[in-house]
Length: 110
Length: 135
Image 1: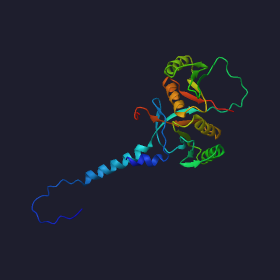
Image 2: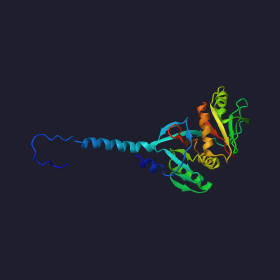
Image 3: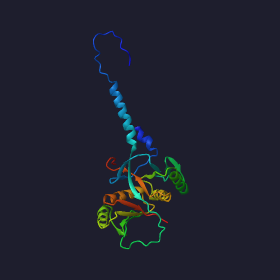
Image 4: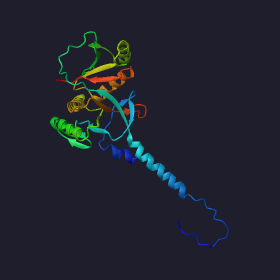
């Protein structure tokens, strides 16, 4: 119970904390794109370098799984530019909208 | 289970804990599966680049929240304190049929701050959040 979320999370991220979010169970229908503090990008757990590769990898994922939605997990300490670049790539790949992963502000207080 | 050698007389008085352990283990597995599957999210719409040449409706002025790298926050070029953002947005959203708020955030701003404001705006009643992209 303690170890499983750590293994499932994979890439260590400090997500922004929010109060007004929707909750949704992980139905496996999300392409999870992670952006770390030092601007590294992971798509479904695989590291991706360079903005061109980000776009092509997202497009490839979209072609393989057209029913999936895009889910961006951005580190709160990352610069907005890094996350915006990924959001633009997601938009260019043809996704109508994008989900941003956050943590519950009520659950974790620092 | 080990077989009891019938040396003693009468019924065996130990409590059988095996079914209890079975149930506990099943519950443990259920929680292990459920815990990582609770993802939390905020939805945001990324606008498509406009290809059509239809002019925008002049009466509908979109609400644009701007945030600079220096930490200055403004709503439609009117500067506002982070504490006053919620009231400002809900006041402006009152007269709108579509609760859409756009975000124009400078690249050097921290992403965490950007999401914090998105959260505030969402709490103020916006249903759709849009992100302004560059050409």
